[in-house]
Image (cartoon, rainbow, N blue to C red):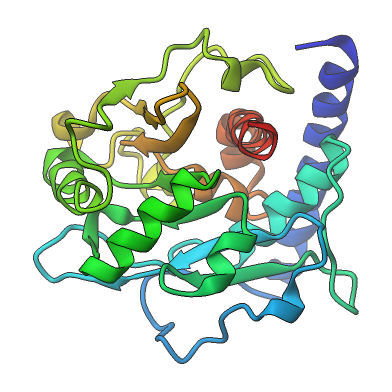
Length: 283
């Protein structure tokens, strides 16, 4: 991490801690409550992106997907929208990335279906809890085309071997194993050195799990080791990042909920996330 980046991250930590204290005080006075964006409750009637939403600035694009009862995941809306908003704010503060904002000044964040043409306007897309995702043939074909045309997918927050196996079964509809092998992303990969020096893959639990006193592995021995796995195209460009047995989205969504949680997981969560997104935008 260069000296300027170190100073920026240190300043960010202090500011976020002050934010956490303010949030907690407002809660005790009966002010605004949790940010929401948890499991379920957001159907396909939610507004998705249109061509008018794109103006050349960075906008956090989240994939809407169907959830299978045979899978293991809470659905596309986990951590939405606060994770998307908070990450975009910090990206604008800690890098020179131009983040798009709406009329109120809040960062723009978009919902995209894999079958939407607007998918190809997003250089970076994210899926949360992909262990329950279900792709049909059209969605799989569009995902492959998107990635081959220069797109980047980050799949985050799925725990245990069953969720991993289910996700891989869906991903292979788009990216067959013979053409697109999965690999563990080494810590010397260029992605981990774009803005900050990432020296580990942190295991980040949900805030509720953490304060339940159960450590960081949400599925016990079945999810004891966090992984950053990837898929590259034929030129070696990473096109898919998969963070398994960890939850980066909660480290962003919950940055203002509790200072202890933030100190433990926020700096690592943002450093990793910003490196990943800058890599996606520049490769």
